[in-house]
Length: 274
Image (cartoon, one colour):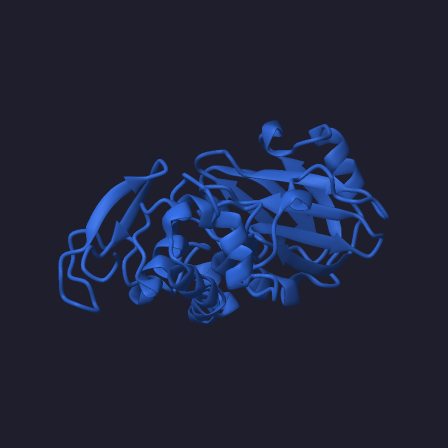
């Protein structure tokens, strides 16, 4: 699933290319991808709109139009958003195409079909996509040891599950919860309520720098992004634990352990993470 660094990469690549573009027409190839309104209304409302900006909140991407309307997107597990040149063959599982007056197309594909789009009217608060229920961003000053201590107090859920709770912190998922906890020296299957003050402090203080590190490593040119079909994330060589189960820990050399935590595959070092 694209997490904050990947969604931010998409925003960084696409926003400069989209600003000022006008939507000529909209094709919804799978109606379920649009939530809250009919696909017909979604197409009608977006046709003729001019892009003013693109913003990110947690794992959500928002296309803002000059009229004040907003198209909100969540990639879920396998969503891909590409800005393609004219006559570019859509990827398999393409479910929505915004054709621009320049001839380019904004294409959204999603193999597992969980991704969703919403339309929010001008001067209307977004109460439909779920953005209103998100917690602070990893970079927010609110993410302090005291904030996490209060959130973890008495919790029987694992610390990994708590870090992936979007109401607690927006944008962290399976990948970066593993990376944060490895850097903090805390096992992902620890019950959040059992962490010491020092452990909570380490986790809290490593959230922002870890996410920022991977945002930077994900930087990519528009040409390379299109060539990689929106899937060529640059962070893979820099992941210390995620996806490396059974391989040596880069810190101590011990074998990394893979275990299901909260229904998700998680990797950690039993030596470095107590």
